[in-house]
Every structure is written in structure tokens, then in C-alpha cells.
Length: 350
Image 1 (spheres, rainbow, N blue to C red):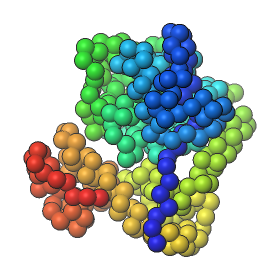
Image 2: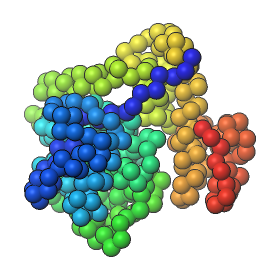
Image 3: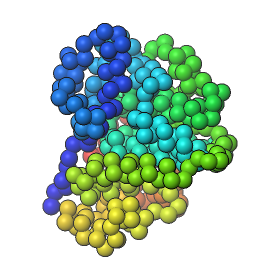
Image 4: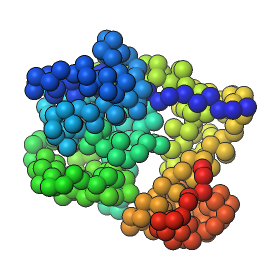
């Protein structure tokens, strides 16, 4: 039985900051929406759902209309933009910065599908990683810059204007002659062409608890965000939702169907039955996500070792991961890496 493939969606409220930027310049936004396959009626409700690719295309047309190649960055750094007052308020009232970031990571899934945000570690430092899955990195560029700029602004809202990330990483390349703008807005070194979009930060203050914050108000606001996530998910196939969760939890110490099932509000057996109805099983979905991520990381040509890729994919050792990769594409990962640098090379279809 074929998978129930559906178009990933976002909430219409994500369009508003870009519309506000056009309005501030006196630029009519009707033609910009039309070029992106959108209409004003699509945005009549803040929580209305629109196609993800239409939204990402729209951000590029806004940049063109504004004559600003860094439109997403500039809009995300503005004081009035985020995922709405609920997320902004949660970032302030959460008991700790770690809790605030975790809430944000979960909240994103209620506003934008196919998007993974997670708090990870890199040596002694902490990282907020951001990626839109299965989308061209240049198409996602404005949204990515918007999101990382917004996150840094929310963190400064909590820790103060003096807070600075250690580094900012982007998968895409910078527009010409703009590096100083990025470093001024982020107050940090900014690197492009990296394996993943990332805010690299010190773990200091992550777990500092603020008296009188957290508790009931956070619980109530989180319940609202959970309702938004449920609304986004209920029309999607089970396998699609499981794949999103797998991608998010790959590499974690405790990962398996027993970890994923509760997040789907199902027992393990029920989840297995639901996947079987769609002609899939959990192991197949794990393999698909590992294969997609592995080939993306290898073909990026960025300084990441095979051991690091193995750990990212959740393999106990490099040998097991290399053997698995060969079973997917027919050649070992190092040979695939060399072959993919050949301009004439045609990658194995996923």
C-alpha cells in the first residue's frame, strides 16, 4: 500500500512579519502573494494552514520586493516578530532557559511542519539546531535566518542584551558583501556552508532557575501549544508523523519505538498496527531517515567525520553504520563521499 503523501504546511501567522515589512515600505503585498501562489483569503485567519513551499517561496519574493537579500535575517532580528505572544510569553515565564528553549523546540511543530529544532550538545558547548527536512537549503534560507535571529533575540530578552552566542552556523552561503551585517546582528562569528544550521552557545545559565517563574502558567500555555500541534498532526499520515519524530530523536541515548509511541499517544502495538495499515513498519522509517540524513551530510562536503555521522545517526560504532550504509546504496560511505565529489556522479535515488 502506498504512503499517504501530503503537502507539508505552515500557519498563516508566519507570513505576517513579512507582510508588515512590505507595508512599512508602502509596497503592495497582493502581487507578492500572487507570485507565491497565495491569496489574501489564505491569510484570513492567523492559524490557517498554507503550503510550506508557498511560504518559503513567498519569503524570497518579499526579499526581492524589498531589495534586501537578507530580508529574513532583518525581519527576524526586529523586536516585534516571533511565533506569537504565547511563545514570547513562555520564553519569559519559563523556570529556566533550558525549559524555555525546549518549549520553543516543541512549539515549532505546531506552526511549521517538516521542521526540526532541538537543543543538543557539542563538546562542552550547547547548540540549538534548526533544519527544514527535504527542502532545498537555498529555498529555506530566509526562514532559517529569520528563525535563528528570532531565537537569539528571545534569549537576550531573558538573559539581557549583553548575551552573545559563541558562533552561528548556516548551511547556505551568504549573499555577497553581507558578512558584517550578520555579525553585527548576531554579535558573533557567523559561518556559512556548514553541515547544519546552528546557534552554538555556552551552557552557562541554561539551568539557572528564576524564583516565582515556571509552574502553572507554563503548564497552561503549553497545553495550548499541544492543541496546536495536535491540530497540525491529525490530518497527516501516521508514518509521516513518526518519520518526523524519528528525525528529531536520531542519535539520542534512548531511542526506539517504545520512545516514539507515547509521543503519538499510542501503545507500541497500536502504533505497529497503524503503520502496517500504511504498508510501513518502524524499522523501515528509521532506515529511511538515517539514509536521507547520512547522504545529506556526506554530500555536503563539510568537515564532519564518519564517526560523527555514525553518532548522529544513532549507531554504536562506525563499523555498524558503514555496513548499513553499504546495504542502502551499494558502496561504503567513504567511497560514496569520493564519488559524490565527481561532477558527473549521479547519486543513488532514495
